[in-house]
Amino acid sequence: MMRHVLHVITGLAVGGAEMALYRLILAFRDSQYRHTVIALSPGGGMYARFVASGITLIVLDVRRAPVSDLVRLIRLMRTMRPDIVQTWLYHADFLGGLAARLAGNRNVIWGVRTTDVDGGCARSTALVRYLCASLSRWVPHTIVCVAEAARRSHSLLGYDANRMVVVGNGFDLSAFTPGHDERAALRARCGFAADDIVLGTLGRFNLDKDYANFVNAAGQLASRYPRLRFLMIGKNLDADNAELLRWIAATGYTERFVLLGERTDIAICLSAMDIFCLSSRTEAFPNVVGEAMAMGLPCVATDVGDVAVLMADTGVLVPRANADALAQGVAGLVALDPAHRRQMGQQARARIGARFTMGCVRARFERIYEGVIARGEL
Image (tube, rainbow, N blue to C red):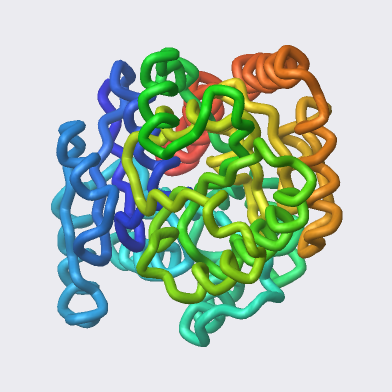
């Protein structure tokens, strides 16, 4: 019997939740579940990817017309009568969960994707998070947290811990296998020599990513390692970012940095690196570290969220917001011979294959879906 899962997500920007949703739907392609996505805001870097993959997509603009679009959301749910309503991110949890209950659907799954509940965020987001905590004993059947750290932090906020389960991100190893030619072509385009060691990072320009930490550490390393180069990829990591350029200029090694901005060929970008670095001050379960591991890269990462669970002993873990420690962690990998770094990278890739594939994630969600539907059919 075919089941219908209706996903509600805040928008389709390039981010961890959006990528996790995309991968989850693709992983269910040959299953008894069909999936529809409602985005609460238009546009976003992931929109074209969802459309190209043939994912059924409905786009609203809740910020422009909050009342009418909430009414439309309720009507859509009444018309579609999905077996499950699965929501992603705070605003979608709140609006999608309420709409589902008002439409008569009790089979609601919320998605919690953050850990740093003490950090700065928009007042509207903090308010919605507070409301979600208050409603967590009534609206959702299950609350899926992307990391154990997210479960702990939201339990302390007042979320119903009895409804929480943890499902980490999953990765498709077959999507992270570009060949030597692709690596060589991108490195040549960036001006990297064959014997250069490329330290890379990837993600949107955001305070939580703490790129000042990365740049400061890079500045310390540049004087010690003449062959070390720095590759930064992500939205607003480009020559138009005056703040980032000032940080880089302050190192005195501007010529050693390459900024590629936002790109869609993530696997190829990762393949051009020799070491991956996560400098974030907060994360839950960072996709980008899993992607780098899947590519066979040794990683240096700040000890945030469930990064330690993800990497285990395959990478180097350092304290957050500490450029000295980050530089020291990178230096340990730079000092290794290339064969040893490759061996570490292959161990990282093997860990992803053993513990964090999309097959594992799909099986976990299948059990959750079955439990939610069974309750609803009682």
